[in-house]
Length: 109
Length: 115
Image (cartoon, rainbow over all chains, first blue to last red; front, side, top):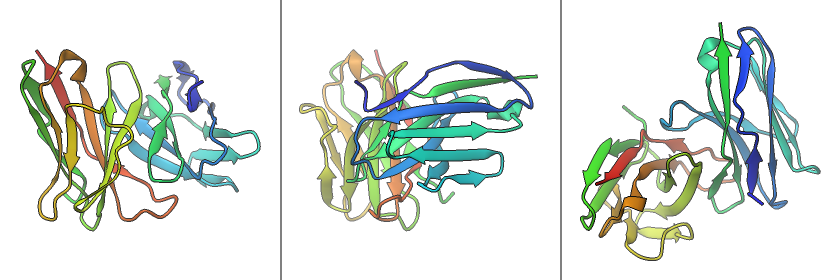
């Protein structure tokens, strides 16, 4: 079983749609959680950290459920520029990031 | 540019040659991490360094790979006697400290191709 699992997609959605990605992690001792985005295998860019209380940044909302070891990302009002691969990332302490395989999003006009 | 700087962006080597990848962390960052992304795969942790110290190298292959982060100058990832399977994108990241939740910021990566 992979340490961080994501549905690879692709998710094909029209502009303006709301889309949600899920991620599960296997290490119950994991400390910190992030969503990164990666465009065409360029460098990963931090999208947002994920906190237990949930957090929102504009059109993006992240949720963490420690009991279920589950992380989610919600994107509202999708834009063409949101098309990318979204990486669920877990820090198990020791600063070693473990990446999920990514979920590919394609937003179409 | 205050971001993480990696060079070269692209590196081509023949089997058996050596590859040296360089990474300068963001200004003010003293923690450096190397990750590898094989074709069609996710990023995998290789090594975590602070100045003059290797903190965690659990992701490094046991042979041919080494990393350093000297007191002066960039961090270097060195691959000796490269093989075709070393072809990948190598990303460097840095963070300001080792506190929990501190995000890592990535450089543009070095795409290594082995002929």
